[in-house]
Image (cartoon, rainbow over the protein chains, first blue to last red):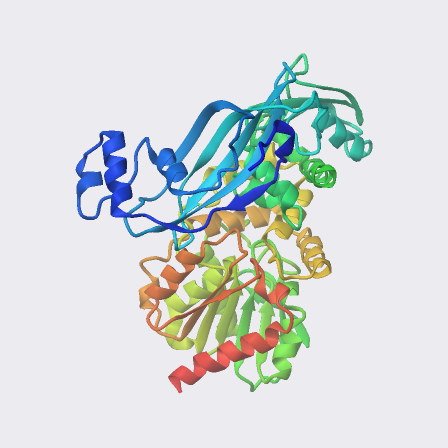
Length: 261
Length: 270
């Protein structure tokens, strides 16, 4: 297979592995590699769990989509164990590219995959994200439509929507966060006067979610912002009063985010 | 249709009636903060199917006067009020149908007076919410802190819990009409919703019962509704695909659906 460079990863690209049954050999190998012979892993009803869960997920299932000479290294893994995995379970791994961000050196970028391991009943047994450093083919520039939480994205967002009337009496700073990426939109009387990583006095409030949730926001058939907020998938820090006051503005920004994506 | 202002519980209650006085009565209850207008399409169509349909505005809602003691925060108060209305109108073995707080009130009416009911249909209701939404948050909402953009939040919040199969135009009409609430009353209703615990009482229901929930209803967990239904002897449970929190407003031809449920429920006892 050809090498895949940084530019070849598009946020939103997703795939699902073929189903793979968990075997007694998997359990034995897991126990040997982890050095963990706790009865949890050794009893007849043993479960495969613990710090090597992600290794199990990756080892059991093909098609992680990251391979070849362009891969410079694995950077991190954040992993959560939701339900036990047992011998006999049939697992499927769902993978989505949720973030692709060029580093300041320009010749490489970080690609983050969100992964969910599901059993034959469709239950999520393990999930998380993992990031890899991938060499770039060129020097950019990169598309901003799905670079959630960046200055370029917020500039495109605020160009797309006219909030002059909705924010006519407002003086403050909207914070928008995707994972660790946060951008501040400074507004004075309906005009966006600056888009920056950080405004001098900080955000009035910041509304944020993980990158996978932003992806869901832009890919859903209808604008799901309120649904996601009501379900606690978008959260807010800072001035909750001003956040509520700008409910319809945030809904319109979500519309704009969907348009530019 | 006839409409009356009845003196009930120390205040005037607005009550619509559709259909023959001698037909089997059905009492239809609305959701938090809303009014009988939610049943405007269903009520006449259901009456045409051979029912006496009674649609009240609960105290403080729609065209009814406020409850004398201020906004109601105990759904049991509404259940008592409904039974007083049944007495007042002389309804013989009515079926009680409600949605959201109306569904929970319907269950509570059945807890209090199963022997007087033909059946109960509780939509978008479970036995106990487990404290959702947060009582503290709701109390805060009753003061100014969370008041901004209230109507926007009601509008968008309603759209968020209407099912995916409901045409956009219908969903927007539902959400636009829901903006007509009195926030003090709807927030008090939700305090009643979040605190009313029927878990121990449901097994005492002896009339035929049917619990209904839409699988797009963010407010309800289907598993909890199934559990509530399982605790009512002989109760049925239906999950409506693509429907959200307001089946009587979302489902086209809901009168036919409800007629089917009521026919099944009353056949069980015949």
